Image (cartoon, rainbow, N blue to C red; front, side, top):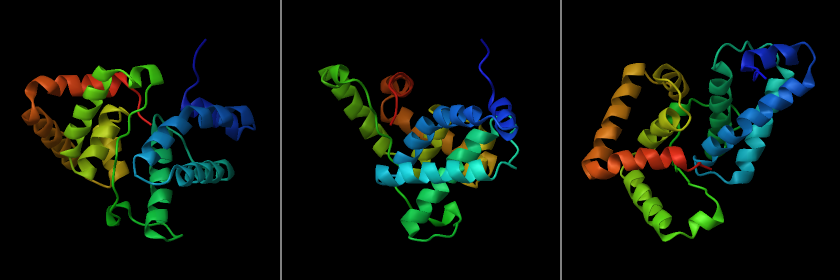
Length: 196
């Protein structure tokens, strides 16, 4: 059975298939929630922002979905909604104007969380992440967790593609300089354990 693409689901929704929209919601809610929660905002606000983004999308079905543009649209929209909350404004703001804290939180089954080795690894990964700026953490998150390409990250962050490449390069160099042996371990950890 083929998994429908975002474009196919969006076309079906525009033709009246409400189930297609529900599939898109279920597909992207976890990524939006993880990304929104990383901005260090109360999770109730994150959920409200996601609901508002999907309501806007539902009632504005003139948006064209091509390739991975829906994921970009949804992550950017939820970030803008949450930054509006941070700024205490209702109108849209330029995301480059607002200061926020970007935090990567790890979640895992209780059994593993109790494991000493996991706790030790998690502590070290958190220490490594703390050496990065908020912008570096966010860009690394988008690149290595959300697996976005440089161009999409640049659009989402309102940056030039080369700037994104430079930040990733500097971040990787910084992580390598902390402990070259732990560098690869760090990225393996990010891919093995899900983020919330």
